[in-house]
Image (cartoon, rainbow, N blue to C red; front, side):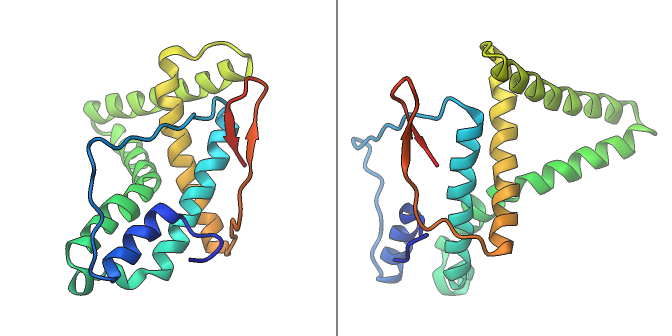
Length: 178
């Protein structure tokens, strides 16, 4: 493997290339402390997603269903399409706004979408003010995850690499990633 690799993705890919398989074990479990600050969570997600884009590029031959069968479909749906969601969200919002001028239902849809994004912004301001975000945490996390995908894709296109990461501990002792 190479320094900037996202190992969980590459391990399965390497196994598949060797005609081996990875198996889900129901009794196995792993826990991870999440970052409690959106800035730290965004940094971590950008790093991981950018590494995944690099791994997909290096292993792009595995995206061919004629070569790798259903594994290609899994990569396309779980990796590529999942990280393309920001593009779809922008297209849906722009389409809804354009259609809102001629349709009441699209006006409602546009208002709901904009309200959702405003709720994320409210949560972001609440977090900065050290106030619990409550239910606003859901839209904030959704927007954060999709923003990370867009930033990571940009960094991938620019050729930026994340060759290493170091855990950082905040004052509460929670692990956070650079």
